[in-house]
Image 1 (tube, one colour):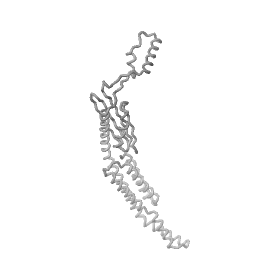
Image 2 (spheres, one colour; image 1 turned 180 degrees about the horizontal axis):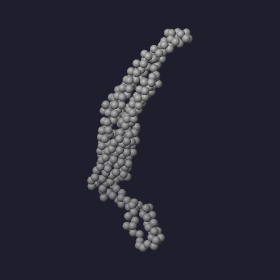
Image 3 (cartoon, rainbow, N blue to C red; image 1 turned 90 degrees about the vertical axis):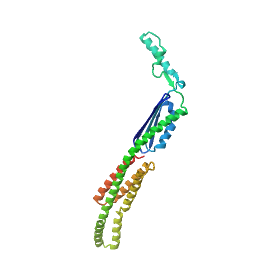
Image 4 (tube, rainbow, N blue to C red; image 1 turned 60 degrees about the vertical axis):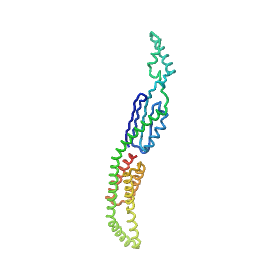
Length: 288
């Protein structure tokens, strides 16, 4: 599910911000962006996310600046400074400029001087990870709110699938006697024409009628719907992958029913059933 979480802190010793975004995805696809001073926290940040989320394309951005003048060191980028000095001297000579190259001329260039912050001690580590958890809580709250609306949509889709299965069963039951009678009359004509045994031919008629029976498939459809409805209504943790599997099984049963369909009304109803199952499968991709 989609979601967004944000947390920040600002004090004399720390200025930090954490953003967490998630988009729909079948599996957990996690990307972490950290300030250079926080590189050592990548493993810990990933562990916090994986403990809370199991699906989604998740992007975590953590930026922090530690304000500790005693622990900061200013260093010069020697290769960059050397290149700048050479370039300035060449410009001076090429254009006949007056004056000498000074420290202030070099220091104004970005990157010539760099501030190296102090190390990531345990207190700093703890405060940054606490912000990550706070942002994740905000993300989960948004995803939970979206999940409530999504659950209602899933229940409506399951009800539509169940109703379609019932209509198919009714249509097939109504036409069963007609199909049997038509086959019997045709069989009688063949018996008279070819001199076949009537009893054996009646057995074939019964077999053909039973071959088009979909009561087992409809029953399995209802069973899958009931199981999926229980997952949606329960509060037992992630169920997206299990719902995805059930949606595949529902489509499998619908395809079997379609292969047995022998009348236009049933075929039309099967098309509608597949459409409802496909809608369910699309929605299930958003479930944690």
